[in-house]
Length: 467
Image (cartoon, rainbow, N blue to C red; front, side, top):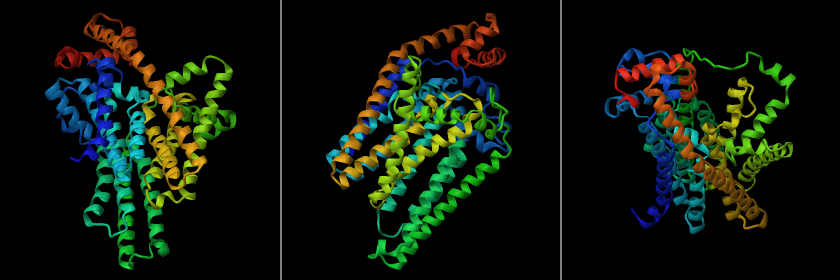
């Protein structure tokens, strides 16, 4: 490993150490909330093929079956095992971006990478870190980022695409869509198809590649076409499996989208503005700020509007300054973040809560867009050293950086209280036979009767808090 490679890896390693420190401060080995459902569905017989070989298997994220088997057999069903998988999975995305930033070169890019690492490992995603069941979400997002970095490397080259690269481009979406990504594969596949269509169009424009032979252009066009077909095919497999799934949305409205839009059109605007504002600061901080006064509420909406403008500016700069001729990764990340916002609106409006899109569990999906925005402004400033581009980059660093640091600082303050909550849950769980359903429901954030049954299964098999 060269000194340059090590320099780009250090921010990632530091981020991992920080996240594990946070886990130690905020977490305990207690199966609660989403774990109740998993215990009732899959334990104790985690090797039972009848629970695995089901028509909607792809919607259940097959890789989690393997992780659950390892966890139960070797770690006594430890939530900290899952949480550790989540942190390590988050690190994989960091390593992929470190590779990308290293290719960009220059001391300024290394400084920018340090800043992006602060954003990437920030604690506005605390809920996903502390809820071990979400570890696979980190793995899927990191897989997407790694795939985007690979596409960027191949697109930036001007030679023929090797058979190995074509194989990887086709294999990665198949693995992610069928084994890892679950419902995340929809937005991921859309981004892939849009990217490949853009790259195919670029190959058709011969003047862009006047120095290349026709054979090279045909090779690259075919590589992008084949990769696009693989992405569509992988998504089709998931959709086929999803056809057999039965979903339950507790608390969801049965009203039609158009009816809601006619009666309360402001709901969707509020949902989006608040969600975009959460790109800067976390849900708890936004909520506390909004509750101060009506003027503070307007400031949150204004912040969300500014973030939307930043997204639009990033897309425009990628097109206007032809940034994609050198690197397509920033635009892919911007589009991914923006699409995630829209998909969350489409899938979560049914709960009729305008704050739903600010949830910490969506932070990493949004963060892809933030990283893309900052990278776009940085690339624009490097291409054309003007005051406007330098101003945009500076403001993006100040706003997103300040918001991330504030959220992280406040979450570090809150971490001991989260651990204390889990300590109480552990005591209640160990005494579950004598606790009323109301107490179990309040402490484990699930139906009291189901919590009692889940704890009975854990106790009978000496798992988790009963080890």
